Length: 518
Image (cartoon, helix red, strand yellow):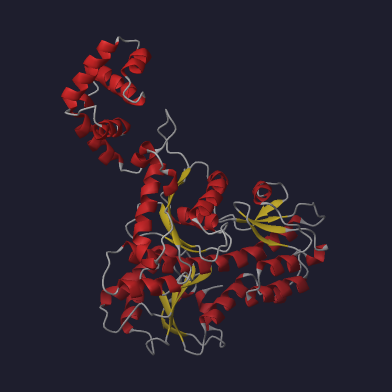
């Protein structure tokens, strides 16, 4: 379907505000509705953008409209459909910005809903199935017509899958997520444990529904029993499910925009208006009454969407938990954060959340084995006002997860660390940034920090063994095969060079921490 096709539909009653032949003949790959001021990161190339223009106000300068349209151009959007309801029309500055950037702009009257536009595009995209000749298709015409109607009505995936395979005798069939979560199953398909479902994703009888999605966001059509049907028919069924999946992804994209707003408020220093704004943001994300909250931060690949997809998929395994996933404005590339509401869980608690996610983590990691996923989980935040502290905890636990590599390895390993895991001094110190740990070690050890000196290396070894044996002179001497007097002499040298008294517990702890920070 092309942009100009929309103008020919009297039912939509759209008006062309600007667009030449090259713009109007662009092919539409999908539709995204947004009211974000900068929607670029949520758009895909070839999409039609619907906006009610809530992000714009008459008092705004021209640059705001310019930034919005520039984001559409950069993302590869084919056209902008601007709603007239918010401002009684489409601002002229927006039309001019579209002209400058070569983006066709159409106005949507008040009596035309965005849903009508979306349904029209996706029905045409899938071929307006009931009207196409049956020859190129394996699915019977009546089945294609029924599935087309179900897609337009936004039916649930269980019903869609059941009707899609009904003419095959309703064999057992599943739609599985990348990590083995059952998205849909037919009445003849028994419940499938997550572990078995994750294995089934790679089975020969499994067909990818949306191979272009990220490894974490893909859905799969799985038939555990072979059926005598043309492969082309299964591919057509998979395409039906792909249309449903894309609609779900559009909803997730919109939800991520609201999550970004929530996370920005959590990370922003408090102001007199902050509590009210935070409450509204939680309500927009469906989390207003789900305290206590848990915060999780995950670091993955430089592709932000991949990490967000990974975290979203993982959190779908937390049944009866609401959550909002997005990216903090101050986040590093490839970092995603989520707020999880736990009130609706009968077994609420970070320990249960952490256990579920840790069990899932190897499977999640296997979907993109080349990219390690590290994560940090906070303790519960009892109120919205304590979410800032929970975010700080999650970031600290993430730093600890990224620091705790296996001995002798430099490459980062996939690991999920909860604040409750940091129960030792060594574990606690891993959450401190590496440059801070290094600086502390240098200053606490003084001259001994220079381990290029053979004498200093010997003293550091003696100190380490002495502290490991709880300050026992005899056991230290035995472990190092030294005379006790030699151990006394070396420890005296350590005390002199560091300015510490190893008869004092606090000084012992200082030097132990310094050794752990090296």
